[in-house]
Amino acid sequence: MASGSPSVGGAVTGEGGAETGGTANEGSAGAGGSGTIVPCEWKSPGQGLLAGKYAAHFPIGTAVRAWHLKNQTQILTGDFNHLTAENAMKAEDIHPAEDTFHWGEADAIANFARQNCMKMTGHALLWHRQAPAWMFQGIVAEDPASLKILKARLKAHIEAVVARYADVVDNWDVVNEAISDTDAKTYRDAAEGSKWFELFGSHDYIYWAFLYARDALEANAPGSSKGKLYYNEYVLTKKADKVLKMLAWLKGKGIQVDGVGFQSHEQLEWPAVAGLQLAFDKVSAAGYKIKISELDVTVYADYVTGTFDPQPEVPFTAALETTQAKRFASLFALYRKNKSIITSVTVWGISDDRTWLDNEPVVGRDDYPLLFDDAHQPKAARASIVNF
Ligand code: GLA
Image (cartoon, rainbow, N blue to C red; front, side, top):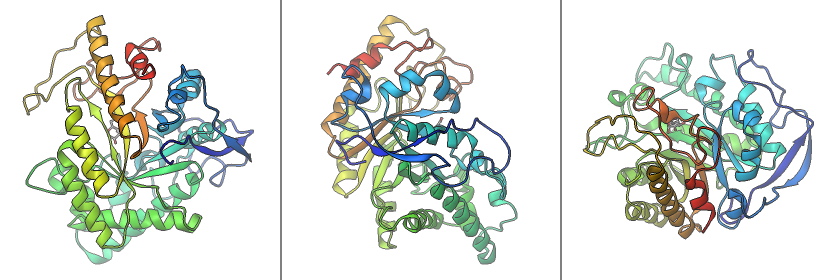
């Protein structure tokens, strides 16, 4: 996924892709499924379409579920050339029991990507949330024999997922959100919800996850891990120094991470573009690539005072639409300016009727953070980033 060049890959013909859910170990065997691999080059759509407009900058991705493949096919294949499974590749979804894989939805998304000459983000191999209970079952914290079992489980999980999607994934979120939210601590610990930290008694698990991911890719094709190992995190304007400390620690242990995913769940006025540029500069100066991995722009500012202060629901007025479009425009201007270090930009969903922000941080409060509205029509935000 070199910056500036659209993804080139192999398309699989003759596969419809399985549906969500299904039974244990369902789906066709092997990373490519049973279809015939044919050479495939992503065809730049018209200049009026988003991914085509950005062909000389970076791939434009979106997060999808199986639903999107069937119901928003045209938008997907027109505006986007990169995909992330919103949930389907997370451990809890894809590996719900030690001997059970639910490949169905992830396979459907991967096959859609293969058929449409898109590449994917592998999201996410290790995360403290949406991790299956079996992974930690019976493990005694800081007990060496027990940790051996936990490491074997993690390794098996990473190997299985990496092998299946190595052909279509051009970057892996190996570890997601391992840095603490509090200033006093570097790493997310048990008090902040990390079972991984609790059981290992340290942040060592991060090293093992990267090692297993790198080795799984190398076992699949020697040299193929290069450029693909990412660490994914939120609020990098605050956490960049801690992330770089972690990446330096990994480097000291022989693990070269390639890049940092800036989740980019942004607000209308925060963080400031200047603060983002500063964080980009720090990460880039330390030798890492950057990807914008989960962009959306909420219309609420619940944390503006520093503590959580939920705002009441508002309608999506024309004024709000204009303000949001300006914010998207300035974010994409920033990304374009940094295209030599940005490897992809992914929006966290397609249309406002399906966004996690309708239920977080306030359940049932309508939010409008994406490029298409509830009726799947393009918003001013989309126009503002296409017309530059
Ligand atoms: C984090 C995760 C994503 C997603 C969002 C909320 O950012 O990385 O996978 O779960 O939270 O939807």
